[in-house]
Length: 194
Image (cartoon, rainbow, N blue to C red):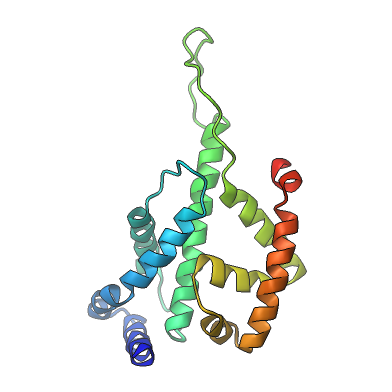
């Protein structure tokens, strides 16, 4: 059943590519559950008190998807890989905006007597993960892609192998090595140094 659903999604993606809005309307309910699951995982991996909700992330994702033109969709796995990348960018952009705001971006000066007492918010984890992924991409781009597709996109080993055009065994090896490398990069000493 999953294979026929994947084929149907691929056909809708191909119809959407030249601008068929009806294809996009038919595609949306077929991919919503899986996108919701992936978005929920992305949000769950964020720091506590994160302001983005799962539905908000999906809405922002759909806005970005509707702006895409002429993507040569290779199939269901390619679509979900691109969605995973977009969700990561949305969360990273939001974290950068929060950091900029936290550092005084656009703030009006006020006297110390008028300033409320507030506690500092914890550093967003997503920026540390994003930095580690960029560093991993410099060392080994494919391992970085495996992490993005599996961790952010929620793709299976087989789907990741299909997107990257490698064997599932290669994805498993890359995943194990990338996790070990990332754990070292995201050790408390490294994250505190952000």
